[in-house]
Image 1 (cartoon, rainbow, N blue to C red):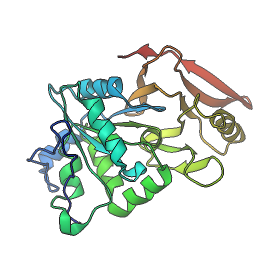
Image 2 (image 1 turned 90 degrees about the horizontal axis):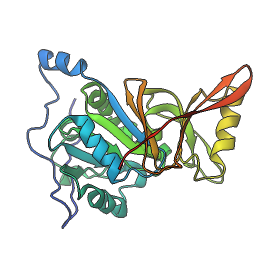
Image 3 (image 1 turned 45 degrees about the vertical axis):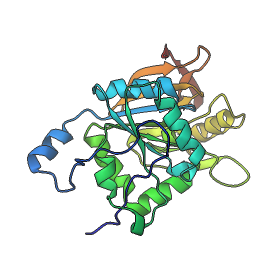
Image 4 (image 1 turned 30 degrees about the vertical axis):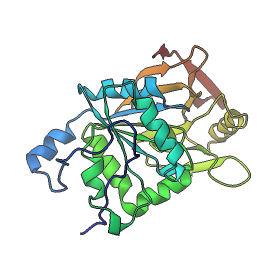
Length: 267
């Protein structure tokens, strides 16, 4: 089946951005697929603020000396400000930074989604509107390619919509008037609540949904705090400030239990 073609756009004057050639072809050999399938599946999330320390940690998780890290700003509608901030946050690091917009035209694009997304070592997804992000990804088949990336050991991550997207469901501000719920990719089992300390309505809504059984138990992250998962196992809880916390929220004997997970400081 022929997909739309596209290229990675770049921001002029920013850190040496751009995708390297030699993308992984869609029809990889059976032997190659078997090796990739055996790779450790990694996701690094933050409740808000996927800044330089989180990007540095993601770079370390790739195991590469100079990893290729790509920013996917779908949820922010490809915000130029967000893209510029991405390169600014990457500037102090030994990484090959790039980005890929989602609002594309086939007349201006030369590479397919899999050629770009499967050719890097890590993918960071922006914050923004999670509902719109999910709809666009599904329309283009990006959701399936991100699953391939995860299975191949490409490190996935992000904050806000960029953290929520990997779970089955969670709380979102993607609709008018009030916080609501959204269904997501489901790579990580359970639910997620970002911005736990930053938006007053997040914690009570999450407790209400988990307590009533309308939402599965899951993880709540303050801004500047996050979790590194291997497969669906929490391997490390991290934060960039002392008062940023991560919690596991569940229902025990009919009561909502909020368990704080000790976080390690990263800089």
